[in-house]
Length: 331
Ligand SMILES: [Mg+2]
Image (cartoon, rainbow, N blue to C red; front, side, top):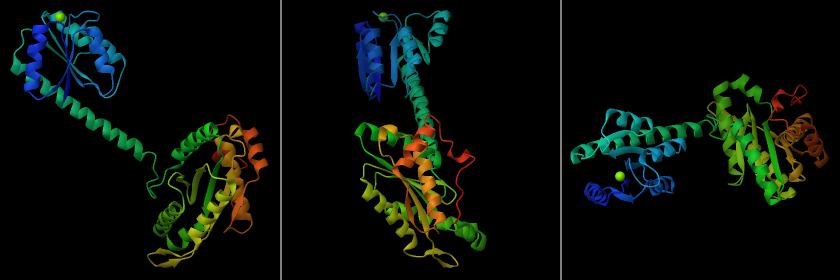
């Protein structure tokens, strides 16, 4: 494990370094506070530090304060090692953000034990951080299908729009909705419904590109974000999704069920005029048109519709679901 020694007294520095090397630490040495701070804020910085209090340019307590103020992750475990041994000094050192305080002359066994405590704290913190990251990732997924959830898809859409503006690409979204899905839930129960949703998710994924974002937008509605393709390829993708769902029957435990899907596609004509809501609304409108025509088809929103939506919705956050006049699906 990497460890920083910040110590301006050469004799102490050498002695300390020899000990730490002997205990299998990878030692980084700084002769003053400024160099210590740099070492702790650089890339692949040590996460354990033994700082002298009195050093040129910046004292150990100041280094400690600056590290804490930066609130950087991962955490740096800091031990102050100093000749200042009054009670008030110890309090001052700990208040500056040090985790531990040792006075010189120090006992090597004690130092070794205290470093072990530091490592234990760092290991605990690491476990906490990875648990937190795993939770954050879980929060972006739809638990039933394993696809992105709606919140993540809206965030992805914003990101993809920003990227397409930079690259001057168009961007398409496809809203995919299973036809007559309610009947399945009513006739065969929710378990059958869930298995169909999982199957549908897999089928949509299987005909999407790796770089497309595929998500479950809610209920039996799925969404695909596709950037950087030309218009013909995009409408082809809508058809591929529709075919993937209707081509062969889906297996529910009590038998096979034939399903179809409707797809609404909206493509940004000019990325500079695009906002997430205009695309969502235009795709939704196209989807309800597909439903009104009997379902099992792909309908594309006209370019001017996307433009109109864009002007009407500029600056409004994702409010599509709360729109009073949101088109209801007929089929
Ligand atoms: Mg000193």
